[in-house]
Image: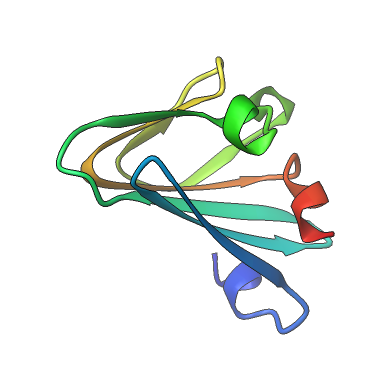
Amino acid sequence: MSLFILDPATKVRQISVDGVDIGIWTTDSGTLLVATNFEYAEVSIDLAEKLGVDVNSGVDVVLESGGQVNSSNILTLEPAGSIGIVLSALSAWAA
């Protein structure tokens, strides 16, 4: 994750969706998405609908603490859960 976070050329975005804070770090080599649920209930987010992300294009989970992403592009987070994934499908967010 430090490859994305510490690179001075990285483009950074932050958004909130349904009580989930999402940080997006984009470099030439890919995109890191880190999501944390601030709700006291489980939250599911359709990444294709909300962010235009297709995880079927390839995803590497780099942090998993109460979160998961399935092949239907659904991100599910337990209360206070977090997940970090690396993918290239978000490169358009750097624009």
